[in-house]
Length: 241
Picture 1 (spheres, one colour):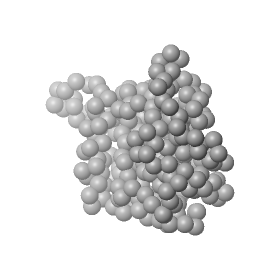
Picture 2: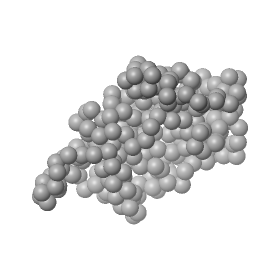
Picture 3: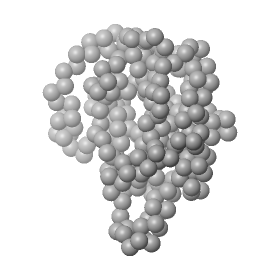
């Protein structure tokens, strides 16, 4: 477990000034604030679609090598920058049309996640697609989603299309309000579900030699509107984990 930033003083700045008006958290906490579920990659071949239909490369985790090779052909600098994560994310998003990725994402939630909890789920129409190239800083700071969405009833889904660990994976606050974050190693074939409305989460500089591409979404029970609904949803997943 490490601090969000190298300096405790800097970490305090991240949380300073926040007024935890989330009083309901005290009485509404899930059995587990994060968990992993395994799924069949043959039934839900996200990586296959991404590599073959969108990126046109064999190994997603080595996608940066294709980028560097193309840059070399045009005499461009052989260096990756944080903004490249946004550029290639946007490029991938434009190429999802007709690839089957969005349709597979809908099937995954409706036929796998909703089936697990025996309840219809509300979810983002399209997943957020994230790219984190080796040697680059993340494009956003550590945050909780409630501060942005003002939805207490939602939980987060994070699905990497490659194996992730250490600085290539997602980091979560160890417990509510602690300000301490730790990496959650997630393999392809696993989906991470967590209380992202309240827990701080984010990424660190990717010090590995692997590209990470992931799908993210917000989930809630259909018709939900209360903090207790998010807790209930996470607890349902905990029971079938």
